[in-house]
Amino acid sequence: MSLSRYAAGALEILTESEVQFLRDLPKAELHAHLNGSIPLDVLQEMARDYLSANAASGSTVSEAVKMGVQNLTQGVQLNEIHEFFGLFPAIYALTSSPERVAKAARAVLHSFLDDPIPQCAYLEMRTTPRATESMDRRGYLLAVLEEVEKYPADKAALIVSTDRRMDETIVEECINLAITLKEEGRRVVGIDLCGDPRAGELQRFVKHFQNAKASGLGVTVHIAETVDNPTSETDNLLRAFAPSRLGHATFLDEEAMKIVFEKDIAVELCLTSNLL
Ligand SMILES: CNc1ncnc2c1ncn2[C@@H]1O[C@H](COP(=O)(O)O)[C@@H](O)[C@H]1O
Image (tube, rainbow, N blue to C red; front, side, top):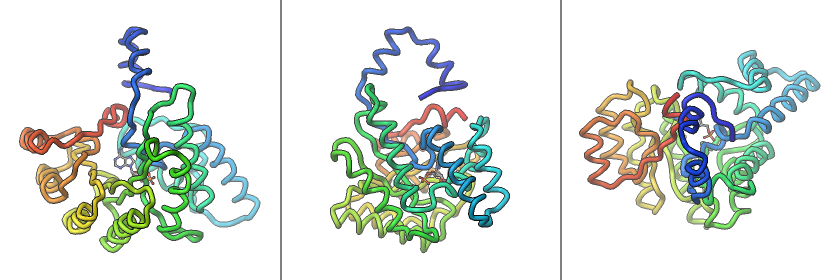
């Protein structure tokens, strides 16, 4: 993986033996969003295939998606967290069938787990179930799980994400799918709340998260990711959603930190996106 900006700067101040020590430590990657972790070369290959299949069939695609896919073929440079969310409509156009979701999942698992010096010893990949013309949300999750379950259970597992922008009915559908698949013995280990930190009314999701917890699924939530996330929201996420892990948690205030310490909640830090 190549690093840029702050992450590259941070790495530069370490000595060679410190870098080697960090490389050799066995790691658990607990916060990898499938569609946000597709290796750039695979994403670009998928973008080129998409553009040529589209030109051949003459099917209609929105200009915004076409432009987004074209940008992906050239490589992207991000400066602000909000720019990052604008990439997903194009990425989602590339992973809109079970075959292409499976290809993306395979590439992500491979990039984390199969290098001679793997990036991690255990990958808990997460993804948001999507329904498209060629698959429903269960079909989406099954396509991903097939790939996850090719690895031993101590190497790879899946978290089902819900998105802050979802309608409550869809959140309920996603969480019920996570519960059912777990009951069927599939390798779903938890649920997540993610999505653009500026969006969504979260109170309506609480009971569904509590159901998931009661059925034995782990709960992680993206929290306090930007300065604009209000204290009341952070407090509600910590108390009502009862998470055992937190995504980012970049802007927790003193009160929130106290709860995190008291309840011994793990924080999934992502140094590159926290700095964005
Ligand atoms: C930078 N910090 C972040 N904060 C919040 N949500 C994020 C995120 N990074 C990614 N996502 C969420 O993950 C989805 C893409 O992967 P999946 O389609 O689920 O596999 C994005 O649409 C967004 O909702």
